[in-house]
Image 1: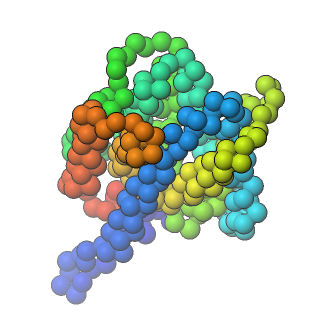
Image 2 (image 1 turned 90 degrees about the vertical axis):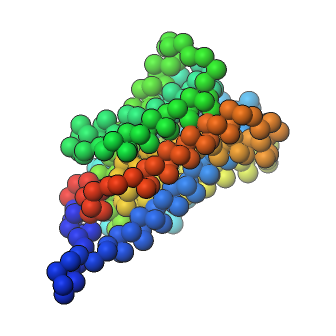
Length: 316
């Protein structure tokens, strides 16, 4: 059933439509859910920065997603069996896109600075409305474009210390395009009934992609107990929980709105770096974070079309 049918507001006896509270409630919960996801992702930056000094990046990705996939498949396999064949195929496609994006981003990071990588990866906030317009025939309003511009400016202020475009930046931009495609695909193909099962399929496919990428060089696993704690946190909380929550949230939000909210990730990363990583609070952090918050505020309060038209889910 498409979202337009599911979200159709009822009419009162006077003939005027009732406020679609049943849609607004889940949508608001979805916003807070995505904010929680970005906070979790932001908390992993200083953990990953330390861990990859001892474990190769591809090996870490393979281990992280393999642990997440095993746990989800053990406890949630019935949700996968309930998926239709079409939904399973879509989950596989989304997992392949996300897994390839992870590898391209990681390879690009080896050829550019972390700050530039963070900015270029964040370009998914620009590419998401472009792909949503092309693939879903979704009209993007001027307030949404304003939110995208503010988010992009915020990312630039937070991350950039100069930008020269080379091989690493090209790979990272390709990963950003794939992340945007993933956001659009999840928004179009997810409904609240299939969100959990679709997440499990995606995690399993991502794990397979990362393991295949890591195997040629041999697998290195952590030797410290603290490293295993970090891996488990990033696998179960920043991996399994985050993707399940993102998939569920995007069943209630349009792709571009979700992308703007997800730009809060570097803001949280800066917050945790100051709180736990020993970094100093700078004007750039405050200014960049303020612009991203303004973008999210604009995306949330901008005049939008009827709620049932907001999320262009494709029939399942």
